[in-house]
Image (cartoon, rainbow, N blue to C red):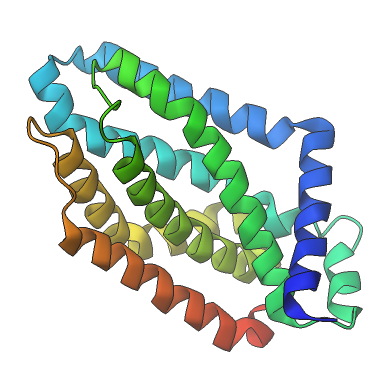
Length: 224
């Protein structure tokens, strides 16, 4: 079976499992909205302050949402030894990892589709003229979070303190990505919006490097 088809099957399994209960999506979206609302009441920002501090607050909310969403990616496979069954299937390890990444990307993208309009209303930030460029930055940043988060979810799945281990491994590694994402978003939220190609190129390079590393090391990542 080809990698693309196997990844699509894993993706379909993840989507059916999640949309059957919607527990993870609902909890993540509510949590992210609460974070944004609390920041709004705590800072009570003016339009100028929103353009200055809003990108950082927005990506902090995305990071919290991603951390909450990525943890069960491999953890929930432990209860019925589903991961062992997947590894016994005649498919590559990267296909399993890729299917998980695609599912996590879609879940986090849905959360962002809900969160960004709420953020724009609460912080009085207009996104009508920058939707396309903002979507590019969000997609590249989200892909970086998802790729690294899924990989480290696989690494920490068998650890006894995996709930604590995942953030400890993930957050230092994502620091450069978050800086680039915040800077690229800030350039779009300015009085004269523009897309900073340097930071966009950094985001794309980060995604390519870690996706390639996941492909090269997938067999070791999926081992117990």
